[in-house]
Each structure stands twice: as structure tokens, then as C-alpha cells.
Image 1 (tube, one colour):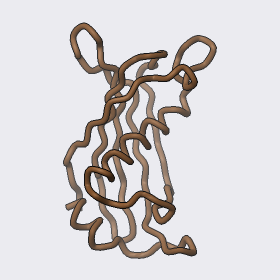
Image 2 (image 1 turned 135 degrees about the horizontal axis):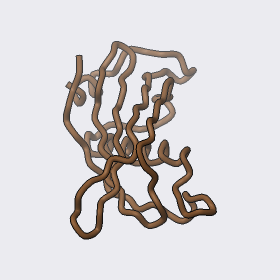
Image 3 (image 1 turned 90 degrees about the vertical axis):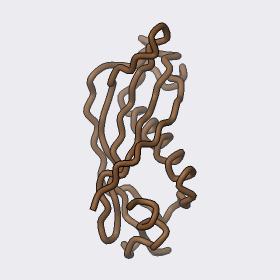
Length: 132
């Protein structure tokens, strides 16, 4: 089963996220994925806590963000499984003069729902309802 509702979040590339040349360090795009994911969960009214461990990630780089670029993060639930789901992410640079979006990176995070001991459990009904 899949869902396609798009969630959009804006952020700025902070100085602490860049290297000595002012380019956003590659691993920080996973932080932008998290920013989008948390905003999506908040909008859906779902909890975001230790019961949602990430089990797989992927990121493909197309271009680099630089310090103080305005970024737009797109997040969508791509797959829903019995005990988890996969969220697709795209991070764009928003060009200041035209508001045109330039794709910088795309990827995903796969998560499972887990009990207090960290063992996978079936997706709770509120997640199924929100994702379908």
C-alpha cells in the first residue's frame, strides 16, 4: 500500500552545518530529512519517539547547498508495511529571485514500529489511518 500526500517544510542552511568552504556537509542532509519527517508527524498528529527506529536510509546528491540557502524539504510516505513504513524525502534550494526550486538531494528513511524492548510490532492503527 502506498500514500502520496506531500508535506513541505522550509529551513535555512546554518553555518554549523557547513564545511570550511561554506558548503553543507553531506551527512547533514539526513538532519534535513529528520526536520521534514518530524514536521510531517506533527501535522499528522502522530508521536515521534524511540518506538520508531530507522532501519534503512539512502541519499542521492545532485547539487550542494551553501550557508544561508533557503531550503524546502518535501516528505511523503512512499510505502506502508505491516511493521513499518518508508518516507521519501527531497531537499530543494529555493532561489531567492524566482522562488524556483532546485533539487539538491533525494532519498528515504525506512522505519519500523517497535515495542519498549526495541522489537518490531505491527503498525498501530493511528499510523495506518494517517498513512492511507
